[in-house]
Length: 138
Image (cartoon, rainbow, N blue to C red; front, side, top):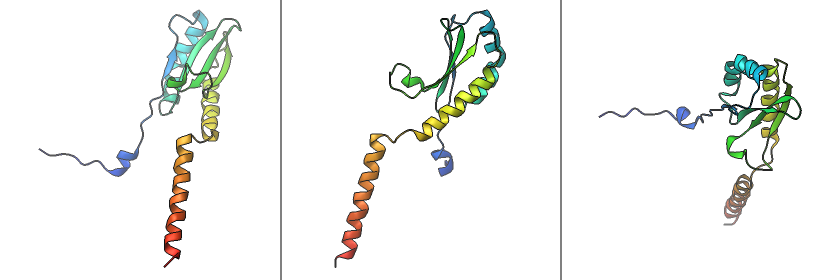
C-alpha cells in the first residue's frame, strides 16, 4: 500500500467555507427575486472567507439586512458583526454585500488579540528573557 505524502504548503492551508444563509420564507416577493438573481455572485464573494453572510428581511424598516458574521457567533450579544440595509425595491445586493464583506474583513484585522494570543506572546517574551540571562552568566 502506498501513501501519498502531503507537502507542508498543503498542510498549512486553512480552508474557509463562507456560506450565504437566507431565512426560509422570510423574504417577500421582490427581495426574494433580487436575492435569487445575485445569489451565485454572493456565494463566490463569501466562499473563501472565515465568516458567513446572513440575509433577512427587516419588515419594520422595509429593507433587507445583509449581515457578515461568523455562524458560531450568531446568538452571542457582543460578537463581531457588520450589517447593512438594502431597500426592498432595490437590486443592489452585490454592491452592498461586497461593501459589507470588505468592512467586516477590516474589523477582523483590527480586532484585539484574544487572551490566548496575549498569553502566548507573554510566555514567549519570558522564555526569551530567560534564554538571554542564561547566555550572559558564565
